[in-house]
Length: 134
Image (cartoon, rainbow, N blue to C red; front, side, top):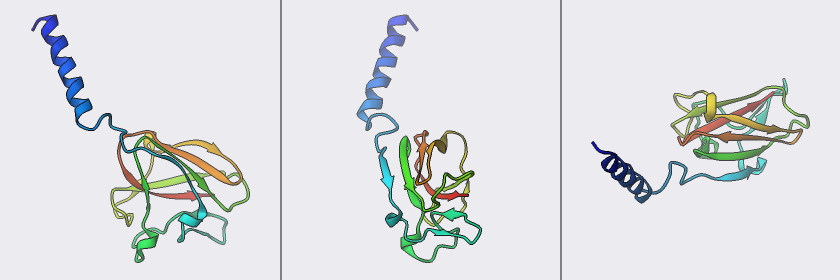
């Protein structure tokens, strides 16, 4: 195939990609997640805070948080200190079924303070999220 044909083919692919809803991060969001949006969050006697319960989740208000691709979330937390450990679980199901510890660029810790933790999903994949802070 000639260089002109290759160039035309690549240009056509670029046009098709943009005509199909743009890039993979078209539904991204950057937002604050206040404690009031996490009615099922709790802090254990050992001082570990969790945003949502593990399955089975019996109440729809306790479903895990939508964690959109290419998005940043700043979580408020009640610890009163910067957490030493930050762990997240992701699932493709709202109730957290078949969850796995989040890793790689699907869960990037960006900033930690005594009142907030800012994380990013740097992938284009949509997940549901459970966050724990210790």
